Image: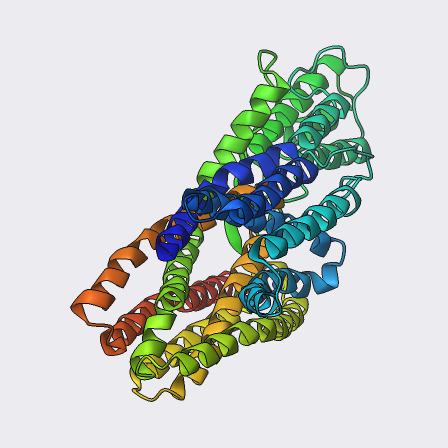
Length: 507
């Protein structure tokens, strides 16, 4: 029954995109309050489970797992406060999640010391409720990127207010009536800069914004040929004709800027939404269209789905090994209870060491990112992704070798695989995707990944009944999964080579 509870809880993580949407639109404080209630409430339900009320384990495990994962995701906000150690802190947050695997041995030790199951669970729930509640009202940022004071970090309202402020402060470039004077070259250049800044988004960094004339009209930063010819021919220009010429150039430039959607975010091709300034459009409707447009374009990104494939493979390998661990130890240990207990304790203690591996992984990422340019950050994750795949390969080979002591090696590299995969995945999304879509992007990835883990149930049945718990073919399946996961680092290398080759052709 416990395997069924575990499987149901893992599959229910597919609901994380809903919490991710709340995270992006309602802010950190709101989603943390909801997550704290789910996490602590799940512990209370599991504490109340006893003979005859075993069904409480299902909602308790689901609430605790969903709330706990989302609560840990919101801690990424702390990493933003330290840009030079951003990857390190993100990896430590992910490693702290893995350390939670040490909880079973704590439960075992307290139970052997005479404490009851309910006492342990209620105490643990109280500690979670207290610490999480304090952090919820102290850690989240109280100011946005522009220094505006906010009570709740509601990203959607902040961007809506900033967009309204930007549009109200921009000069009216769609109509050119009631002009009082002909702008000089310096004024036109200043107006051009204001227009560019008004359309920029702090989360997006354009790398290919063209400064060449578009629509057959020269840029407003320089004098137009028509205006120059008029000055040469007549010595002066009438105000009406100059206004018409400047109006054409300005409106055309404005159209090009609003329709220019190709953007890059730390090496990943992203697209910024088009801002429509027609009188009939409200700011709220425009913001909603912007969110929907950007979300769809992120989902359509090849990098998103290659990362999704890699995460599916790694997560399936991690979860399947955890579910079959006892059966593997029983098979190689000839069902000796002392050996099974020893390896179970070793597995729990190794989860504490995963925090050290998360720290090393984060320091390596920060060192690589500090040397990379904005367009070269994808390359920084090639080595961590390769290391996680290599750890999975070694753990799979150790499962195949019919020696009980080799399972120490499998446990070690499985811990490295688990910590490295989740830490690199979280750091990659936080570093390369737009920050205002972080919640939805991570929620979709985690939701699909854990929804796919329903496949572990037929794998368990196949392993237990068809293979009679022989780990050989299970290890071969793990090897195939690892080889499939290696497609992501090779894909990133291919993208890097193509980008370098295109730059060399341009030069």
